[in-house]
Image (cartoon, rainbow over all chains, first blue to last red; front, side):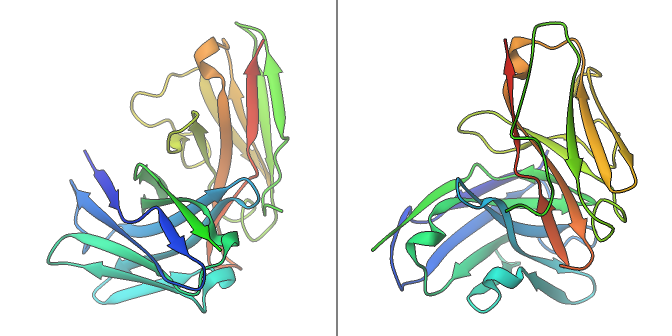
Length: 119
Length: 110
């Protein structure tokens, strides 16, 4: 059974960097058939995919156009986890952030972290 | 404005069959398989249907999915009070090179 455990601060000041980590159990961040995603949910934006990282003989990253200039998703093979960094945040980035695995479909989700950006 | 279009609300009485639609385009629903999620308040979305019409282990067969062209549908038969939740469709978009979601349908059991 795959489990994803998120950690990170729930409050970030505007213009600073949002950082979250997702620890994986029951699978490997280096899996050759899984991708590791970050998704957020807010009343104004609904569910919004932010990006993913995955390994297919080498590491790949794909980012949503809306955040491409501000986002970094990194795998950490030593800890079997992956992270999200979102720079220069504004109150508009306030949302519940989820990490999630995709193998074909998005099948396993983390518990969610409410991140509030204060001005 | 979500890429996929769902009705904001749906309702039914216990035992009824309720359909929920999801409309997209040739770059998403028209070219890849559709997934459906159920979200209860305060929890993460749960995979309900994958690959248009497949149920993960543990999902009751009261839930079914279908797809035709650029539209997909989730049907819930034998409606129960515990089915009251938000439902979302999701699909990979080949033009955007990312996952896209519907705006969600809030299902009320009357």
